[in-house]
Amino acid sequence: MKKIILTALSIITLISCQSDEQYEDKNIDPKNPTEVSPEFLFNAATKNLFDQMTSTNVNTNIFRMLGQHWTETTYVDEANYDFNTRNIPQNHWREMYTDVLFDLGDAKINNDNDTNPLLTAETRKTKNAQIEILSIYAWAQMVETFGNIPYTQALKPREFVLPVYDDAATIYSDLLARLTVAIPNLTNNGFGAADKIYGGDPVKWKKFGNSLLLRMGLRVADVPALAAKSTAAIQAAVSGGVFTSNADNAAFAYSNSTPNTNPVWVDLVQSGRSDFVVANTLVDKMNTLNDPRRSFYFDQNLGAGVYDGGPYGDNNSFSTYTHVSARIIDPTNPASLMDYAEVCFYLADAAERSISGTPATAADFYNKGITASFDYWGTPNVAAYLLNPDVNYATAPGSYKVKIGTQLWLAMYNRGYEAWTAWRTYDFPGFNLPAVSEDPVPTRYTYPINEQNLNKTNYNAAAAAIGGDNQTTKLFWDKF
Image (tube, one colour):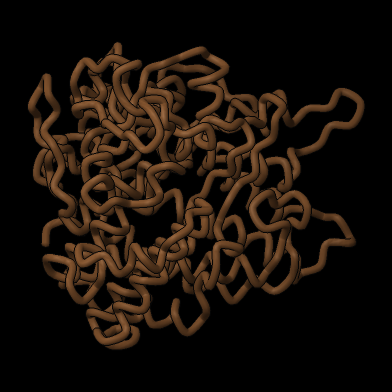
């Protein structure tokens, strides 16, 4: 790669997360100059994506608090929805664009340009499909988080210093099309051992691709302009084959050795922090349901079987309220981008809409979702839990969206982004207002400060197009 001269414009590009100068040192071997291998870039992007979605560092990821599974102790700005003091949206934006999407983009370029005579066309195509699925995951997450974002002009710093923002619904429609094209190209082991999710297993990659297609189809199921594409995506996903057990989960295995430990361990144990307790929003709901997962989700630091969540957003004493379980802070605890329980709840939703199955089959998928969560955490007594009148699909209160939304939210423990998004999708369960600010629960991240200052014209257009750059602006898929 050519060295980028740091003019004023390229500095703006760097700040906008569009520069590839970070690879300059990686690309140069003084004895044997070469490009960075696609395997290296794919592996780096994979770990960066899992780390970003798993971390609980308040500078980069506060999704567990947006989902009201955790709350804070000493410093409570983030639990009270202060996004700007620590530039949280900007840090997430930078990480996803620079360390995930840019790496994946370069991995594809280098894979396309790989002249290794042993690289078959089939392997090249499979590698690109694996890159594409992770890229689509990241793009979709950004759209679901911010709304309109740079897309067609993004990741092209030499062409577009100040990229325009594309319409979120248009991006999402394109992502559905891209994913549909990518899945059939998974025909061999692709990246093989360099793939830290599935070890190159094409069957599991296809299940992941189809499960992501199902999720994305359901995300836009209530958007009239995308209704036909939503139905087609859901039907294609189910017929193509989605996750069928926890063995299919899109998971990343961490190790005991830094820098490959789970970032939650880094944030809480290695750093010696006691910044979080479990939120009363979650504990109260699980106490009401007598949910057996409590002893697996939470520590019993208050006594055997005693669980008391800290009031959400309050200045909580660490010693007074329930802590997270030892499993959560284990350095080897795997992280997931998507799991079987989540897929089952989406299938229940699709059945209620008569898109895949019939409403009569929704209860079976719902039960499988709860069972998958119990199995993942090693929790016994799922049969008794399913008979609880407040859990049983036939007798639990509320509409199917209330039932599915509540149990999906409970199952997404330690996956803060999906817990928050379950609430945004189904509007259940009810959340608490934070004790200090009493601000409403955000429905999106605001745009980064750097975008407001350096890409002002395009930022202003994007903010106006989505209805204002506010934390409570409802995004296109979350309005119904």
